[in-house]
Amino acid sequence: MLSKNEVKEFLQGQKYDELFRNSTSARKLSGILTSLTYDKKDVIAWRAMEAIGLLSGEIAKTDPEHVRNTVGRLLWMIRDESGGIGWSVPEILGEIVRNNRKLCADIAPIVASFHEELMLRTGVMWAVGRIGAMDEDFNRHAVPIVTRYLDAPDRTCRAYAAWAAGQLNASGAAAVLEKLISDTGQVFFYEKGELVKKRVGEIAKYALAAIKPSGDRVPAHMIK
Image 1 (cartoon, rainbow, N blue to C red):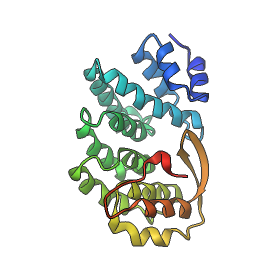
Image 2 (image 1 turned 30 degrees about the vertical axis):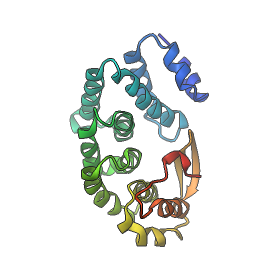
Image 3 (image 1 turned 45 degrees about the vertical axis):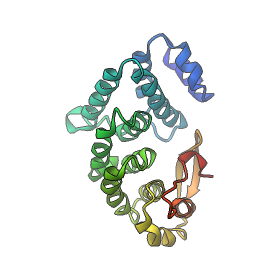
């Protein structure tokens, strides 16, 4: 089995396919990746989250029950009895749902429901945006949650809420997003495998552009 340092080397090179091929145990690899997700100031943490989602999609092809069990453990981590160690869980769950839309469709609204927890809120905004408009029911549930945080005091939260509004095609948020374009607050934002600094207004601008009458959305990786 690969060591944690070896896993980090693959993540540093964004060599996800090679990482999976060189791992002798998908379950152990998932555990190592999870252990690398806690420091969200480090791009490796974000790449680890992304890798967990991709890995779960591969595992689900032969062992969907394992993926469901993993989700169950993550939901336990996010709750109080876990001692608060689950602060990256919304993002991880978002990646798992994103890569297992049918298998984990019921998990999407559960992830969104954690928005009331202050320490998890920004992660929930990211997760909801990554999940995107799964279906009409989820969209109806998620859009009101996302739009209520477009004026959040925390600039990272409102930036991620703005991005998520674009991904969900939240047309009702257009006026607020228009106002946010002048927001000069800067945040770190994960896109295309990198953790980059962006203005809140810049993110709001692209979110606004993503809201189209046809319902077409701009995928996360297309934001520049």
